[in-house]
View 1 (cartoon, rainbow, N blue to C red):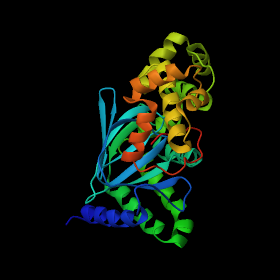
View 2: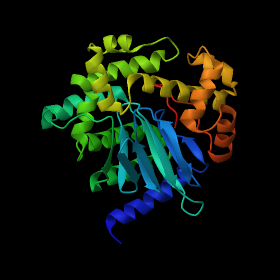
View 3: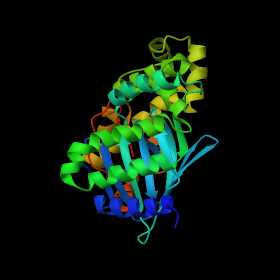
View 4: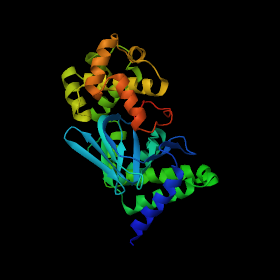
Length: 312
């Protein structure tokens, strides 16, 4: 058996112990969760926080417009901006989906960006809000060391942060690391759209319009529309609506809010309009969606503190 296969098998063994129950398992590091799913999950709308997903077993597919992002034991996913997309999972009781989710640490990436750019030069690759990239041997070895350390409480606290930094370094210097570096640098049109997205996620419950968001991005309305769609594959108002509906679903799922209360909390003035748009977006009424989610998905742990709010 090749060394890469041996490393993967060992990672599956370690991660199986670190994620003993379905859903999100806490770790010794605030920004790291270990995930397990014992069943296939059908295609459903999701909204990830900026972060990194490394699968050791199973497969996920993300759909954004005409693009398909496959992440499995051979590929990892990077999300530098919260972009709504649809996702499905291949998993079973015999071979559960096992993954590491790392919420993006912007302070750590900022420190590494300066060091990596000083050595490698500024990235010439275009920034991407989301991409799947092959797992190379160096990243696989770093991930294995990280899981081994996280399996021991003392090593998790002492060595975990430095090994997490090593994983970030591997990604920033990997095959598509330049795109990640360019995205995190928040420059050019991508950076301006990022400012508007940040505004949406901090103020989605308020009255927002295209003119306000274009002003936040320091762009004309026409240019803002164009570049926002290039980054997110949706219009600004579609993105705002999607964000509100995802947040409402989380409120109903995690905090047992009624549909009308959730609608009010995310900025809807009309509960009936909210219900119509919710059903059009998720394919079910609010009540039916929450019942289906509870029956089908293992509920994630409470969201980690973030400049964004996620729906995993």
